[in-house]
Image: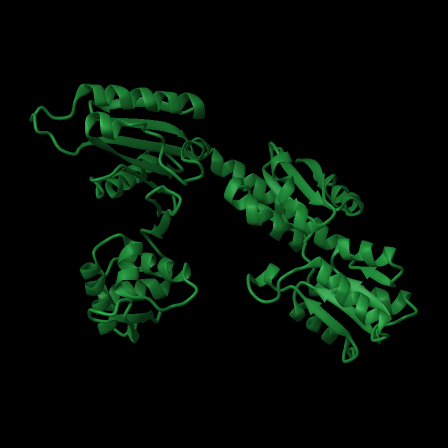
Length: 438
């Protein structure tokens, strides 16, 4: 199985990566170069026919992925600049640089990496000046600005506070070196490069296997109103069939009619991903709603067998039909994860779970495992574990009264507590603010 790898790297670092890639016979790689890591997002349009993205470090991964993840759903890995890398580099400076380790100016992705390396060497780092950019790794903390890092190192050197710079950014190294400032660029161990390339190959194999997974779709027409009493018009079924046949041609899927108002789609996971834009929208149904006063419900299912995929598709169709007033689609994976309704804000929850905490909450409250996993997903999407019944109802897409009944059951068993009130309007009763404790 041939894995197509896109390597995003500075030009002088590329030979180290490609040397490791050539050790694996199942990898075909294409290299894309950048100068400043903040400009990596400009490479998006250049990358074609790729199974996995491999970045030279966390910085290009971060700046590329900020745009790429919304446009290309391709697995990605990056070569780490971690404590192991820093331990190696401190040793090299100690052995090979006359400046030694007494007065360093350092930039690193995360302070904890440096502290672990310092502890390994039992060094005195009290004379060091360190700047991190932890937002790249943790999603919060210090942001990254290469020009600020250059100024930081330049000031430390020119003031005499530091006699050597250790930088983890190729662009910063180039600028400081050209300015005549003694500077060491972080050397990445071959072990880290080799492990990252192997990880990329493994991800590519998984991706290709997943895309070949069996998929089944079910599409059904729902009558909104029927003043004539004649039921669903045959023209609606004919038009939906034509639309599905066109989609089938584009995605290499097979379409069969089960009746006047229902169709079945056979394909692969890759074809359904293409049909739904990586699960971000339901397949286009044109203006059928306006023409025939109907809505379309669709369910998609993945499975290791056709039988399993069809069973999951019927679960997806069941969830879609719970919204008869509008067209919608739901998808169920072979791991019983439900995704939907398929739109830009798709939500996901599991119908089954082996998480003991979730199983315990479901058992004690009488709520389903699916409901508890939805609540867990709701909290994971929020930065703050505080919410109102209205917030929860909007996420779960049911009434506020139903949300309040659910919260009451959870409160009785101690899994939810009230932590305050909010009053968004000057008049009316204040709303209780809740917090989940599982």
